[in-house]
Each structure stands twice: as structure tokens, then as C-alpha cells.
Image: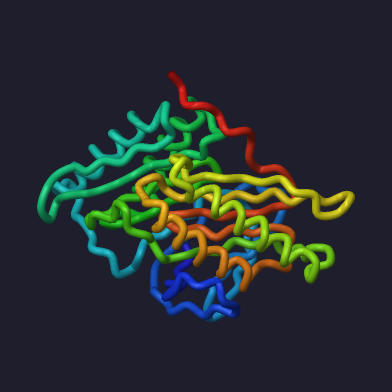
Amino acid sequence: KKKKLSISNPSSPTLSLPFFPSLRSVSLGMADMAGHSHSLILILLFPLFLVTIKGQSPYYSCPESALTYKTNSKFERHLNQLLASLTANVAPTGFYNDTVGNGRNQVHGLVQCHPDVSADDCKTCATSAASQIIQVCPSKKMAVIWFDNCLLRYNSFNFFGIVDQSKLALVNVEDIYQPTKFKPLMLSVFRNLAASATTNSSSLRYATATVAYTKNITLYSLMECTRDLSSSSCSYCLRTSLTSIYQCCSDKQGARVLSGSCVIRYEIYPFFGNVLPPSA
């Protein structure tokens, strides 16, 4: 069932805390929410609003204010062509963007998989994303859907290279052990990951870290931007997301902040693998 909520729109890339972003109204939801082993909290970053959910990805966002298209229109045909192109071309690099049509009927889109996902699993994820995004966001001219292994985004506006500032936070309901000790560690790890993900040599715009927190607790962290972004735009997206996750969620055992341009996540269990080299 789709939940209509407000998602924050950060107005500044600063890491100064606390941080209070402005608002933008959108629709978002959780599709096929079955079988996840622990509860999460869906958070609006400001004002604070909580919805406890059980389930797993995908999560999706469809702005209520977005333009709509009609059934059997040129835009719908172009969107279907775009989604087919994205799923056909995402492997083996794990990223593909394309534009179909022109004028009012033009649609732009991208799909991206985590670099640690195999080419076959990447294509499977992209295919599922393309299929579900038109089901959960029917007739919308802009939408984004997030799976654990990939994200897919399309828009009638050419968003390539532009940071999507709408953000959704998902938080584990369990508190972390000794949060005053954990918060500075989490912040330090994410700052280092942001530097790694945004270096000129990091074309994947992706970085992970595994750090011991206590004798029995290990911190697993991930940062990733979509590969259409420049280093500076990626850095902006990650910094604003880090500010948000620190503000809302840094006393919990796990959390993630999702946007159409970047994802940051930490857990106390493994959720990523080794980065695979591109297929020949």
C-alpha cells in the first residue's frame, strides 16, 4: 500500500548540526513488502514523522505534483522504450542512461546496480525495477524506485548530472550500544567513504567500509552516487545525506538515506560484497 508523505529537500550541503531541511511534498511507498526479518522506521527528516514498517525493498517515490501521461500516448510508448533500453544495456557495466523521444514526449532515465552485484543479478534487478516502477507509479512522468541491489529513475525533465535533493530515511528500530561512542565513529567512517567515492579515480562513485565497533559488533557502511554525477555533485549529495542520517538515525543499529542521486547506508550485519571487476 502506498503511503503519501513529505520528503525533505536540503537547502545546504553543510555538515553543521543540527540540520533542518525544507519540505517538498511527494508520494512514496513500499512495494511487495514481505518477508523481512526486522522492523524499520520510515522517517520524514523534518518535521519528524515516523511509520513503523516490516518488509524489504523496493521503495519508490512518485511526486503528487508530477505531470501525468495518458494511456497509449506517445510518452507512454517512449517510456516503455526507455525502460526496455535500460534493462537491455545495464550489464556488464552496471550503469546505463538514455533518452527517448523529443519535446513534451521526451523521457530521460537511468539504472544503476551496486558494483558488487554480478551482471546477471544486475540485469534481473533492473528488469524487476522497470516492471514495478510503472505499476507503483502509474501514469507519472517522473519516478524513482530503489531495490537493495539497484535503483531506476526516469523523468520528463533532463536530470542527468543534477542532484536529486529529495530524501527518504529508513531506520532500524533497535538502539545501538553506547550511542555517544558510536556517533563519532559513524561520522568519521562516512566522511572517509565520501572522500573515496568522489575522487577523480573513483568512476564507480562507490565506497564501502567494514570497521570493528566493539568486540562483538562490526559496522558495515556504504556510500554510492549515480554515475551521471560529477565528483562535486556526488560530494554534495553525500554530504547532505550524511547530515540527515546523523540528525535522524545515528543512535540506531542501522539506517539508510535514499535519493535519486545517492544512497548511504550502515548496518551491524554484512549487506554488501566485494566489488566485482567489470566484465570483459
